[in-house]
Length: 219
Image (cartoon, rainbow, N blue to C red; front, top):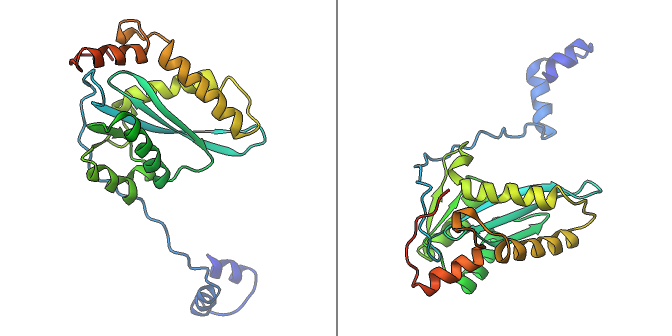
C-alpha cells in the first residue's frame, strides 16, 4: 500500500527499496491474530442452595460525567443470590481479581466452584493458577453464551438499572459509596422470589442454621 501510494505521487524506487525503508522506520508491526479459546463444556445452571456451593463473576463498564471510563467486578454467591462484592476502579487486572477473592475467602470461606466468562482477566495465569491452588473448580461458559452465566447477568442488569443508569457520577468515590449502600440493601432488605420472598442474607442464615441443607432454587 505504501509503495502504491508513493508511485501515484510520482516518487521513484521499486517496492524492495520501499520495504527496506518501511522496516528501518519500524513500521512493520506484527499483526495480532484472533485469540483461540479452548472448547468449553456447558455446565448446568442448577446450583445447590448451600453456603459456598458456587460463586459467579462478571465485569461491567461505564463512564463518569467527564468521559473517563471505569469498570466494576461483580461477585455473586449463586446458591443464596447474595452480592459478595462489587469492585469499582479504572482498571481491574487479574492480580486485583485474586486479591479480592482472597479477601472473600478469608471472610466467607472458599467456594467449591466459580463460574466465569472468557474475559482476559479470567484467562490470566495469576487467576487460572490461583483456583487450583485452593482446590476451586473453574467453570468457563461457552464463548458467546452469556445465558450460561444467567445468575450474575441478571444481577448486573439490576445493578446497572438501579445504580449506574440512575446516577451521574463525577468521580469514583460516589460510585463506591452508593454501591456499598446498594449492596447492603440488596442483601439485607430486598426479597427474592426464588428464595421464598426473603432477602439473601436471611436465607443464608437459615440454611446455615439448618446445617447447610441442600435446597433446589428456581432460576
